[in-house]
Image (cartoon, one colour):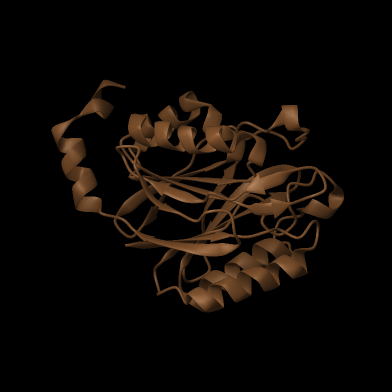
Length: 245
């Protein structure tokens, strides 16, 4: 089971330029069919609150994600603002939308004005249950525990525009969420700059011990990693912490 995280320097409010970046990064990476491919929060526009960053249902950014999943025959996750909500959309290899998550904790202190979501979601990929979150959600373990209690996902995602000023928090919080939920956590962050912030990248996969399995560093690139599901299940069977939630 392979995951491919796409870390990019997002061009501000320029969807077509970002589509081209994603296309090139995937063409270089050549993901195998059935890979889980994950893009950052609001990957096509940057973390913008303007009308340039949002679209209606079925808009061009969502359509691009759907077509990309079909072309590469992968399960694809990407962030997009739709109808005033900051969302993570998930498309299956046949182009079917299989999950749609709305960010529960908008980053109000950083100026985010999108309306909050109300519930966690889970989707199936390969033999895993996967729950997506978005950026600031990472600071709220109680939000993650709802998913852990309901579904015990083996993999959590956090797609983000996490700033360089708190890069050390990003790493430690990803590790904490992985340890406490006995799961893999994949944090997919952007790199580069926008008109307001700089971003460190540090897209990474963390295992249930809090160990960093793979780290993309600070440059625009893709990060390919494999998951060891039998080892995770063995660990959970020996230490049944999740039973006591």
